[in-house]
Image 1 (cartoon, rainbow, N blue to C red):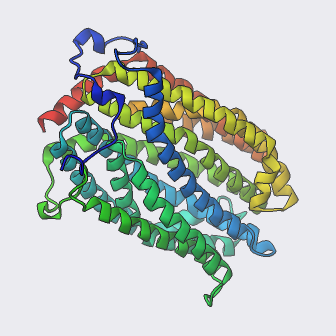
Image 2 (image 1 turned 45 degrees about the horizontal axis):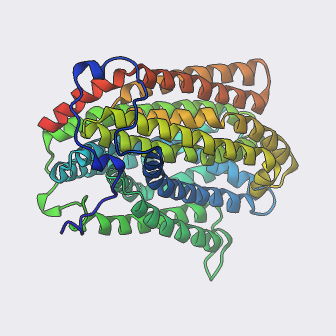
Image 3 (image 1 turned 90 degrees about the vertical axis):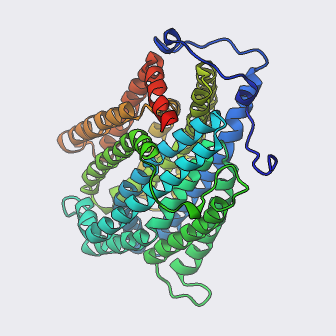
Length: 498
């Protein structure tokens, strides 16, 4: 049975549990010496083993989203630009709902990782079950609310009326279809979050890869009308995505029901909540959910300002935002490793290993981001042309990519440091930092540069990069200050007692 429940082994597993005293929990984060028997190469291996499958999974998922936009953008004539704009109108309301549920699962990852560090399989599975219950209830609420308000959200996104009525109607239909698959998508997020908590990132890679292949094949069939299917255009892209998500959920559910795995869901226990664990999940997860809601509200306000510039500028903006989302993935993958290894280290009382893992994650993440930035500069026009060949889109988009490339190291470091804070359960600060930078810096500066100074799309992107830089400074200072250590000890002491 031990072999059947095997989990990914790290350098942390070979170390004895720690019992840090009060003085060790106070003060700034200092890089400790390597424990006996632990090498920097071992730290690198642990970070890469968790982050690499996660990176591949995230990249493939984002590439599928990009494929949707590319295939819609290649529709003939004005249909391509209108399709890109319609998808752009629907994307932010969808992400508003979707990322809130993803963020709630930070609590699942943090608690599962904590109990994995303690080798407490029973508590880890209880935390997983509570995560599924929360995801089920909240996703049903969000799906219903989204379907009732989809038209209003898309019309709001269209800004000052510069968008055509047909584009707004197309965006509403796209969003409605996407919401039909919201429940299985959110439950898949929770299964993925629990697997990441034990350091298992290969299984999410598997089921998401299968789903992405299904999505792309169905894009080709349903957008353009192949193999006897009618040409559905933008609606075809939405249905292909939903079907792919259902495939991912089916595979993830089979994995979650397998009792031989370290993490599994036992239906015989029903859906009755464990009050203590539920409280701990909400304590960590709700601030992350609020963080993402604030982030998406800020982005919606920001996107609405850009939508007022017209179809062509907004289509260009959506292309660049899609590429930026792809660039996020490098930092997100290393952030996943940082969250998992931070949680497991705290669970074992090894705050020294937590600091070492975070430092190694940040180093590797920044190096990778420098390579990505160079690629964005070298192939800027080629990348934009993949989406749409309209000269105005290519010329402006290629220049914006150079600005995006320069921000890559700061962006990656911000993601990884934020991931470490989430692994420690310090989610309220990241929520506050995002509220400040997105709502005030990005939107405040954006209103000035777009509407007062008249810099148009360039002004919008200057505001976006300023938001990223300010947030990087705030998050890095929070992590270095070390206050998260005391908070983590208190939060997880309550989880142990639940």
